[in-house]
Amino acid sequence: MSNSSPRFSSRFAFLVSALGIAVGTGNIWRFPRIAASNGGDDGAGAFLVAWIIFLFMWSIPLIIVEYVMGRTARKGTIGAFAHFMGKPFAFLGGFIGFVATAIAFYYSVVVGWNIFYFGSMALTDLPNTTEASNTLWNQFQESGFPILFHGVAMSVGGFAIYKGVTSIEKVNKFLIPTLLIIVLISVVRAITLPGSMAGITYLFTPEWSQLKDPRIWLEALTQNAWDTGAGWGLFLTYAIYIRRRYGLIKNAFTVAIGNNLVSLLAAIMVFSTVFSILGNEMGMAKGEILEVMKTSGPAATGLTFIWMPQLFAKMAFGKTLAILFFMGLTFAGFSSLISMLELAVRNLRDMGVERKTAVGWIVGVCFLMGIPSARNLDILSNQDFVWGVALMLAGVFVALAAIKYGLPRIMEEISSGNEDDWSFPFWWRPVINYVVPVIGVVIFLWWMWLSATVYAPADWYDPTSLYSVATCVVQWAIPMVAFYILNTWMNNKLENSLEFEN
Image 1 (spheres, rainbow, N blue to C red):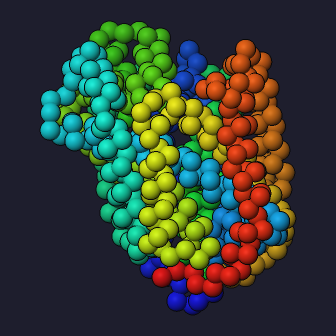
Image 2 (spheres, rainbow, N blue to C red):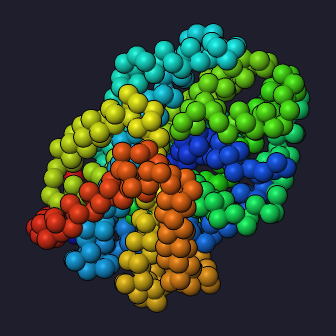
Image 3 (cartoon, rainbow, N blue to C red):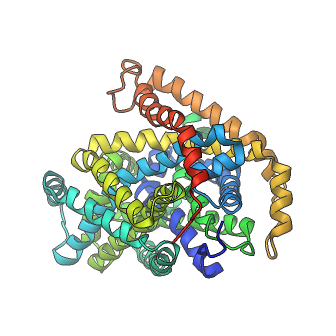
């Protein structure tokens, strides 16, 4: 490997770029609705407990492994798996890379929605009725704008990674601090609304009996994987560009905990706003408010894009807050989209493809593959479901790579090479060795059984059904088989590619 291979210029540049992976629309667009959907009659605190447990029993341990794999192998997901598990297992790295890229297909569509709504909130009056808000949303979806703004999002994302790590860190140095300021301003405004404490109280009140329901744990695991980006291969990709003196353990904790704090702040903002306006001003009972939050359309479209604009319209300084809210969503979306595109580009670079060509191919393919989701919300919801669940498999594969390489070997190599870092947490080794594989497999099998017997018992075997077991298995099998067939070819390409980065 050439010593001239570029690196992040500072610890701060690496930290904000890693936060860019973790902090995304999953925090602001997805987390509040998932929390509401898994809340009981008295509160959503039990879901938060399970979610925090998985922060330490899933996300942080896997982020540490990703950092280790990326910094040690200095290659993307395919090359890293070949290095850690052996050449016969390079295809698993290909599958993980595809999962993150498949998420990018429709994630870019959501970023495009945010761009449109940011412009709409800034240039037109806020919709102050449900009818007006629905009209804005429906007219947007029925037009060609979703495809247009999906293309804008992909183009901007591609431009941001065009020159590699130097442009990535410059973009994130602006996006992440600005996003955090926007979130803080929005939270302060939301908690000062009359009746906002009812929403905050509900959010943090636990209904302990809910923890007996396996669904809570499944939702908490998939949301935490979504929140942090653990197991996607994104941290692995950015770790290629970090210097040996940057602490892996310290950064893993900082990024994961910082990310989850942003999710909590976003939930406080949304719950405060919704409970204040619907409850305090419109007189809805708590059950009615929760029904709005839980059933607001596929892929959380209703809560974010139909209800939030009209809620902002009913509060003082609402237009300013609406502009900031959708600007924050846009920035959050871009910071994560950039990391997904870089992951795919990195794998092509490892195969010897020039960065300019790799960026063009990835942006073009991702745009085309995202068009169905841009045209049809049901397809987008299906993709969110299929590849969100696949993150459990990806996390298990990452843990298996570390186990195959040797956990004692990892701890010895990393501890001896770090100048200013924390020690491995005492629970990291048993969690990676036992907890992550067991949790991943058990919850995955339980989910498949529940899907076949409860969620979609009539069509669990139908791959055209949106939420069936079959639709997941078929869509996962296609890239898995393809990468398995290409395994030898990919290893040959990795060996023949001597140049890492321009």
